[in-house]
Length: 418
Ligand code: GTR
Image (cartoon, rainbow, N blue to C red; front, side, top):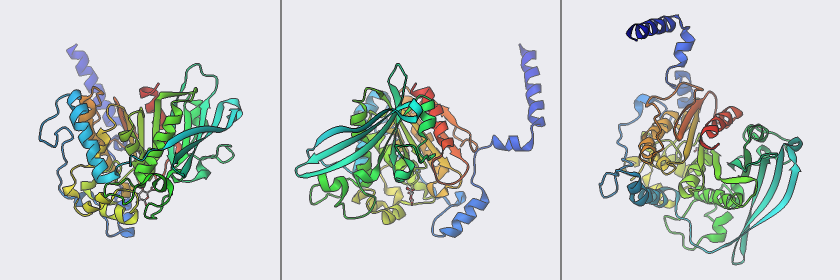
């Protein structure tokens, strides 16, 4: 036994020495290239892109209650700490949904059982929300694979890019929503446009669902657009759980960038989502606020005053006084499946800060029995890490969501949703 071990380690040493330099490099943790850091710094000199300039910070412990008690088991998390953390994010970041009564109805406006050369069934569904004399329609598009005995798991995309990415007729195809590839792997694909729920502009919350449900005056914790889009994802989920071709217990909510922030909040608010994918969600998403790397709390609230609630604006340049940080948003997904990913050129969204955030959320997954041992060091470029219910990758290239990313999401879903 001993000599066998010895033999093996000699072999390993020989192998490592013989390995070409490029290969050895690839197994190292990702670091932003100096060229990227300098280029982006030049384009936005008022923001920090240098790791060594990240200020010292202390993160709040997700497993210590506001009263200072240590959470020791899943029961205490579910009963005490999770509601606290959810409340902190409602109050200080995304906002509270008004309790205005509304009616909801579904209408299938188009069904094609022979879509994608007979591989899929297409349904287009109008989800109508009505309150008093005001109403709004969310248009949901759904493809499910044909010829399956069981109901299909589905990815629901919160589309923040516009209809050219989500053509129901499939004349225009986009890697942003790769329906054909997902169908071939046995997944359904659903999508709605965030603009149906709330147009992405600052109009003092007059249009979209705010015009239908908001009370006046709006309190400082009233929901912003991200919370409205997340609410829209839940209304789509209301339909999906009724569809005979969909397995409502295996629906993943997916979003890119502002959509990624939204997907996280949708998964936090609505535990029916079995999986959350936050693609390049950055500031206000997976990236830690206290690192002040790339986009900051002050900047996001100035550039997009409608995304968060009014309370969040108080924390611009005062990140250390936040009673939370974004790793705690990720804990709200536990013990369900969570995918965080970044792109190497997208330092604005702080890939390193997003990974630390994921790593720091893991103790909550573990206390809930979803054992997830990801390493503390970030993985190399284009190398997926997955463990238990969490997964991560950093793709080479710019801010976008591509087939490469989707393939990784589906590889993870194959493990956690099939
Ligand atoms: C940027 C914004 C980011 C991100 C991005 C997007 O301008 O600063 O937080 O959300 O837009 O959604 O594409």
